[in-house]
Length: 204
View 1: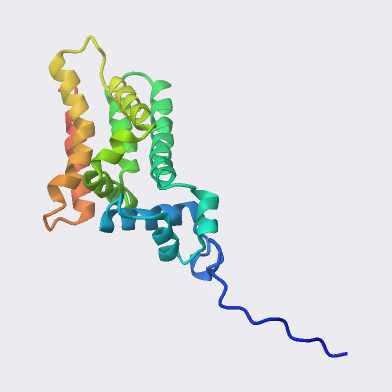
View 2 (view 1 turned 45 degrees about the vertical axis):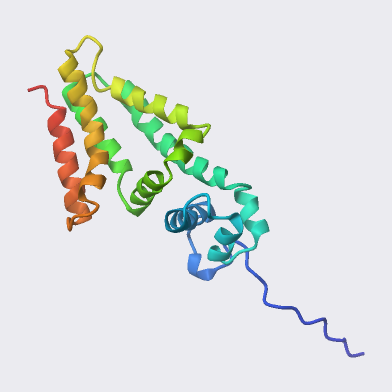
C-alpha cells in the first residue's frame, strides 16, 4: 500500500543552535551580541524581543526560553561582568597588600575590558544611561566596584594616594571615550590605558 505524502509545510524557523554557521557558539552569548547591536542601532526602548528574534533568525519561543524580557538580556550581561570581577576580587583578597598585587589586580581587570563585547557594552550604556539606573543589579555592581577600589588602597593612606589608585581603574575605562573618535588602533589604546593605570599604582 502506497503511503500518502504528508501535508507540505513552509520553511522551518530554526532554534538557536540549529544554524551550522554558529557551531561552537554559545546561544546565550549570540543573543546578547545581537541584542546589543540592536540596542545600539535603534535604542533600547525602541527594540522589541520580536526584532531580536528576527535578527537571530529564530522563533520568539526559542528566544523566550533563554530570555523572557529585554531586561533579562541586559541583566545577564551585567551578571557576567560581575562574575568576572568577583574572580579578580577573590584572588586579590588572598594576596599580600603590596604594590605588585595592586598592579596585578589592574592587569587582571584590564583583561576583562578587552574585545568587541566590552566596547559594545560601553556604547550601549553611554546611549541608554537610564537603563543602568533602573537595573536591580545596578547597586550590586556599584558596590562591587567599591570593593575593587578598597583593595587598591587603605583608608589610612593619604587622600592623594587613595584618589590616584582609584583613578587607575577609571583610566582603563576612559581610554574608550578618549580614543573612540580618534584613529588610534584598539591595541594601542589598550596599551596606553594599561601603562597609565599601572603608573598610577606606583608607590613612588
